[in-house]
Amino acid sequence: MGSETWDSTLGRYLARRLAEIGATDVFSVPGDFNLVLLDQLIADPDINLIGCCNELNAGYAADGYARSRGVGACVVTFTVGGLSVINAIAGAYSENLPVICIVGGPNSNDYGSSRILHHTIGLPDFTQELRCFQTVTAAQAVVNNTADAHSLIDGAIATALRESKPVYISISCNLPCIPHPSFSIQPIKYSISKRLTNPLSLEAAVETTAKFLNAAVKPVLIGGPKLRVAKAGAAFTELANLSGYPVAVMPSAKGQVPETLERFIGTYWGAVSTPYCCEIVESADAYLFAGPIFNDYSSVGYSLLVKRERSIIVEPDRVTVGNGPAFGCVLMKDFLEALAKKLKKNTAAYDNFCRMFVPLGSVLSKAEGDEALRVNVMFKHIQNMLTSDTAVLAETGDSWFNCQKLKLPEGCGYEFQMQYGSIGWAVGALLGYAQAAKDKRVIACIGDGSFQVTAQDISTMIRNGQKSIIFLINNGGYTIEVEIHDGPYNVIKNWNYTGLVDAIHNGEGNVWTKKVTTEIELVEAIKAAEGEKKDCLCFIECILHKDDTSRQLLEWGSRVSAANSRPPNPQ
Image (cartoon, rainbow, N blue to C red; front, side, top):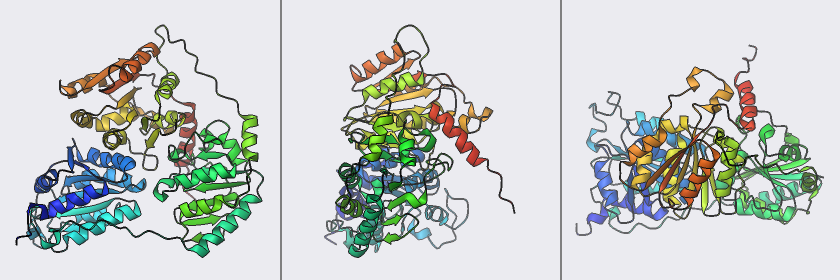
């Protein structure tokens, strides 16, 4: 058929679709079932294939990439690759990130046969991987013929974009280079049907909420992590500006609400909140939560003192006022925009905050002598590095709490994985985020225990010329777990982390490493990273005492421990 050219193969069709939606960097690990597919992807001039050291990091990289670009993609091989990447895909599902997970599957002729294949558990049933992915993806497509391949691929990708969730696409290893008439023309651009608000439901929701809030004496606003999936950040900001209410964020929403807002009061995280923020929120007689997630971590072991009857809970497509009523088919963005026009300006709660607020004292340090570096001193200097041209990635652990205290300038990005909380996430996510956000220099705060899980893909950052700054916090173990429940299993073997990165560097690429033990050494390292080494990947290993943790982690850990150790209910 004359129309069947190199450009009309299944693999090239997939490549064009990925480029079209913005996933132009694809993170991969080769395996014999996906090699021909990888050939097809790298043949597309708009696709940059990035080889990762393992599938877990490829998935984390796609997660980080999606946080900046809006969608990410990874390619792995059948079962051994799929079941390795699935932890990262589960994390992306929990964080509402559209990640296209593509797997090179068995030869199409093997489906329905009694053959046993390698990379499986030794049974002639090829559905094990698919069944695992069904619980952590919004759609699954098994492409084992060319006739309906375009429909399956388009349907899965459209679902990822519409639902803001990962999807799974398996492509038989013998199909990527095969042409088909359905691939022979430029694919029609995606046009995802917009979700619509029910006007009558919106009107009722706004009227009921406005009446509720306008009758309150000290109302407050709290932004939650689902602001991202609802694409309602700008609407929430407008509501904050017009209403006069003080504005807080839940910890998992840091970075999604501008901290430069006139009445921004910090992070609401129960007993470990920003100073005076908890008191203002929990003493309010009405609070609007936009896109919240209340889990054991964000509620500090279920210890928040908020009352349901005072709450307005705004989900991406639903509004609940107090103990009821609830209004469905109402999109958060539409609701917040309409509500902003109906509220009376009320600054009472913010005025209370201003009356009680006392600025925190500065960290006492003269930056002289050989006094051991302290964690609060370290983060004081990281604070001074932040601009609109930077972004912060915080790894699971004490970095959660220390990074929450950073004041983000306008335009400064911020990401961490609170709902899933998988240690090791930050290395892969840094790779992906930095690849997508090339206009920012990314600062990552990673603990030594987490780094040991996924350290290999420092190699991939070097290979791709990334210029991030990594602060490796070397305090001898899993500090966050120590504060929840201590034991010898929380102590890890110490590594020479700068030596490891130098070995990975191996004279190829631009890398600079430094081990620091004092504030003076830290100041000099930061000066170098921002100056003469600004075009390098900078790795600064900070030696800290094992018990040097934030006050917030100590409080949070004890409360989460109490929640975890509740005795069984009587039978």
